[in-house]
Image 1 (cartoon, rainbow, N blue to C red):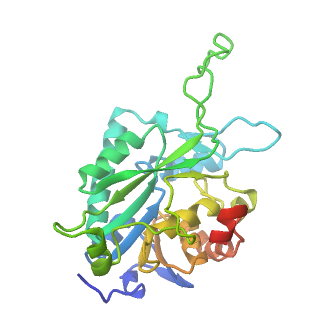
Image 2: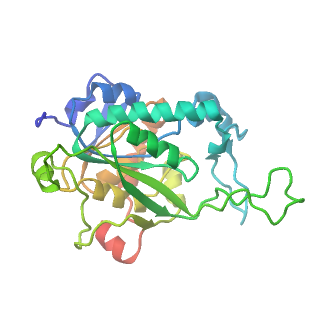
Image 3: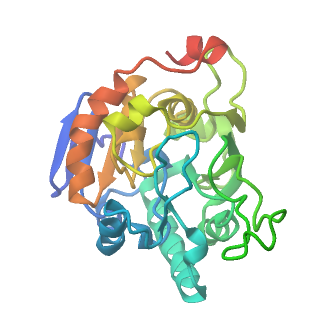
Length: 315
């Protein structure tokens, strides 16, 4: 166990920048995780691209032109333009097999880089979570449950394609009202209790809320506010009001290094920065990496939008 790893030392040989207490790196996370010293990271919070198909350069170009591809343009209502969403149902059997292999390999690399007892919060979808979560378990990580983000989405609820008039009272899938986040843990060494792991590695459990209540696995959430989307033009942007709660819970002692291996525009890193935590984000796409340099300071400076009790806790 390397107890002397610093955030700066995790730059390794990759292009990077420091933003406050955070480090952002331009690299493929597989390359970075392979180079990180073993048993280093205290937690991960990440929203991965599923099999990377939706973030292939061809698919991003189609999305930017409004041509769709794997990106579905949701129907417009109430006069507002909707952000594109990846159509996970477009994956065929072969691509789903590739997706499973992708997460098994990624899970093995994450397992190596994490400290014993460290947790991973991993965003998924109702359509893919069963396969993705089983692949993560196959990699050697423990499944510790799900965190349910309650949010009204634009997924599902559609009438049968090209037969909308014929079957007006049928929906092919239920309208999505939640987003599942898988919760995983690197196994605690045999014979250790959670308390032992906390003393030895600073990991093993989840951080309670500031008022002493336990972190809940169901979190009511808003859709990402327009002011945050105006700062970060990323199709999978999660709201700070949700991310700050998850990031807070991920480090049980409020110390250590939290990583987002699929950083995107940096919203998870911004949440950690807002809470004064050390974090490292890794992004392979040049445009999103450079976007994060501007996005992280702006998002981290926003007042927390949740009202009432949670606002007092996480502002």
